[in-house]
Amino acid sequence: MIKKIAVALGVVLGVLVAPVPAGAALPVVDMEAVLKAAQIDPRRADTAITPGSGDSVLQVERALSAKGLLPSTYVDGHFGTRTVDAYAAYQRSLGYTGLDASGFPGPTSIQKLGENRYTVTRLVSAGSRTTYHSATMNTRTKAMLVEAERLLGRTLGITQGSYTTSNPGSAGTHDGGGALDISVSGMTSTTRTTVARVLRQVGFAAWIRTPDQGFDYHIHAIALADPDLSTAAQHQAGDYYLGYNGLANRGPDDGPVVTPKETWEEYQR
Image 1 (spheres, rainbow, N blue to C red):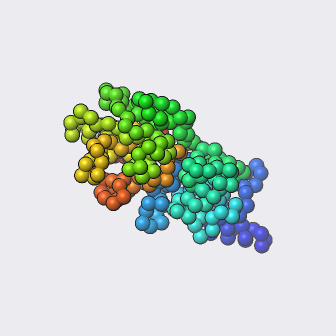
Image 2: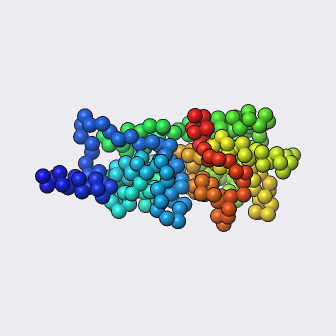
Image 3: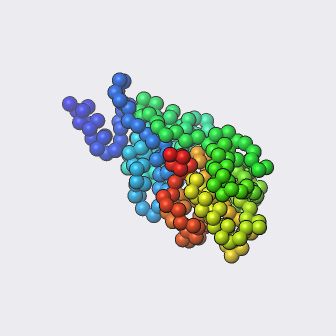
């Protein structure tokens, strides 16, 4: 009886105190939902739960708590900075370093964390690194760019790809995957806006950068929910969802309005 009360109390507090018994149906974690929360929640001024993500995040947090990496106070369905830190610690425990230990879930780590606790649906993979238009990117980002070009009926030039630190002015956003700077050479103001809108349509957070902001004219694009995003890029993705411009001043979003804001996977569906 005491054991039953303890288990029940643990569930009420949001902590799963033991793995799911053998033979029992495991809860399901939606990786797409977890990634969305992991981008948005650390950028919130409060501890609100990203709609549609709470149940999946809660399962991940319970697993982290069971490993002693996350205090029960933070097992709440909000993927805030404490959950990011705990997930990064878990990634390091697997031997991951650098980009792979940023606290942003990848398909391998989220499944391994859930062994005997939950199953994972809607897995998201960045894919392998490749070269497209003479720029480095991953296969997921390339597929998104190819679709944007198809919709636009034109080829887009890339001035900076992913997995590169060649431009210190990028503040780390290109250190990981999913980040592109796109040339607007020869484009009218209307065309620039159209390109940014289509990039948003297929799952990028995209903004037109201008000399008034301290940049040469270009379009800066971050592939939403790319598991290889650098921390800086994750923050820009979260700010995009929250209606900001992706810059350090966190001004209002100055890009074309696209509703709903969708990831590549949501766009394909």
